[in-house]
Length: 218
Image 1 (cartoon, rainbow, N blue to C red):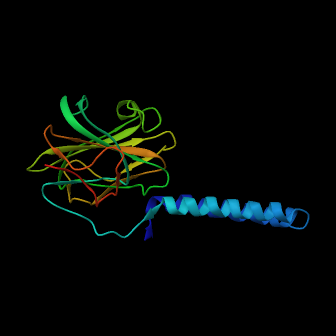
Image 2 (image 1 turned 90 degrees about the horizontal axis):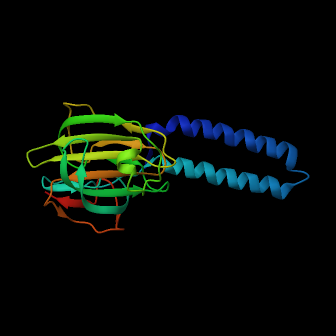
Image 3 (image 1 turned 45 degrees about the vertical axis):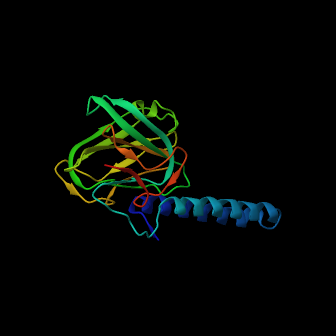
């Protein structure tokens, strides 16, 4: 397991805050209120370790396949439905949405191989990620990857806590399935829009892992 580069600055700042809080606690509280000082240490250490775990990138045996659409993120499947895409396709598509809680790994991966033919950032609201309107009203970053099988649109969507979406792809770039496409800080979701008729390989509320779980077959 490694720590994602997007977390280096945040973890460093948090470590300094942790150190200052506990130095002050030890200096002023340890003699008169030892239990309070101990509580502050344990609570602040727990929060710091949680923050470190949020930016973790676990070592995985990734799954690839020409006909596979692999989960772009860790989380739970919250939507499997047909929906009209007003942004790029301008027609009905099959939508599979994955909700990421703050406890999930937040690295995002390319669900298919191909060429990036569309890449667009959208400012927006910060509705809770499971709200259906979050797909079209929240801050989001949309990418379309095209190959010989299909065009697949992937939306990184900010949630109520997520305030920063990172996307590393560019139009014209050739990408490989399971290659890193970006990162979203804290709770959020990822939508995958597929051609109508695509075979769905997951169920609602199923837990999936990015780069491993096959969510559909083209």
